[in-house]
Image (cartoon, rainbow, N blue to C red; front, side, top):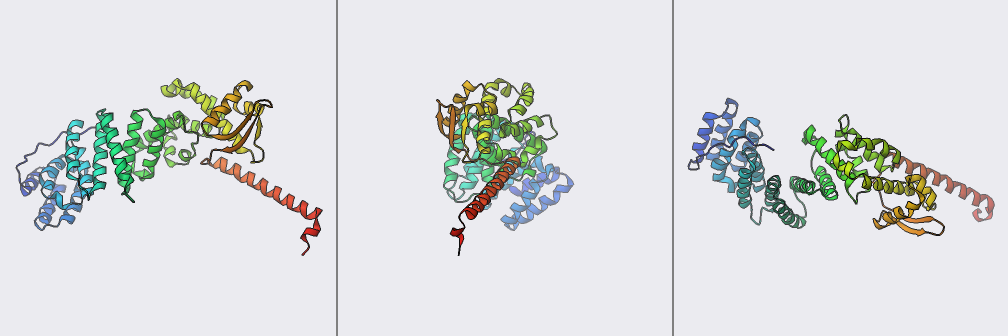
Length: 390
């Protein structure tokens, strides 16, 4: 993030004098706003004045005047303004500072203005955005402290403005990205996307978010179901980009397709994180293949020979037992291992968010089950007709 140069301010100016000074320097298309501000201020129409300032701040050309307007005009009547709107306007002003330290000082002051019992939502919003600046300054401890504080406050709310949750999850995701904690990043990034309209992100932001989600899904040591991400429209941002292979790789993992994994692994040279964790990724695709093999079987056909698992996962048969033990320890499946007969009895498989192909496979199995039930009913009826006599 970069900030334009800060505008110098005279803190002794009265509110109307500030408007007159800005009016002299601003473009002609903005001067009418300054006239309206003065009129509404004189009439003490604080709500209408707030709405008009929001319009003004939404115009890019207003950027050079926002700091002075906020600190020398809005500050005069900010106690009449809705605290959440005060924070929203303050976040726009924050972007006009020339560096992170100046922005942090400004936001810290803003936090103090909304730290009241009746403005906890606004307080959380301001604290989380302050935490983001601390993150940019590499103050990880300060960021984590803010996250922990705001999480406790949010837990007490029955309902919260969506923008508050969006701010919280976005900063959490960026924090866990900085810490290379892939599972936590994955969870918080998806929660952030659930709180916003995807079209509010730029094309570059969509690609970056989709890329980071793909990497975290692959490297998260407890993430073995990519269905939620695969069905999310954010992933389409990788299509027709140099990163499209990552999207294809996610589908290969979710289907446990080891052949496709091997084909796409040549791209790992483009991403050092994947190249350095190739052994982990191979084990992960084998586990995904095992899950898929179990999932595709009917519930009455889940006694699986080691040889079948070896064929599905392309592992030597003497490595199958270790793989199954790993799956059991991760709670991906439940069951038991028969070492003598070299079989695995699976009683449960982790619930999954299914992609379209997997849903179609389930549809086919339901059709087969339905046909089996019909045949059984006809057999019973033909063999023992006396049971069906009315």
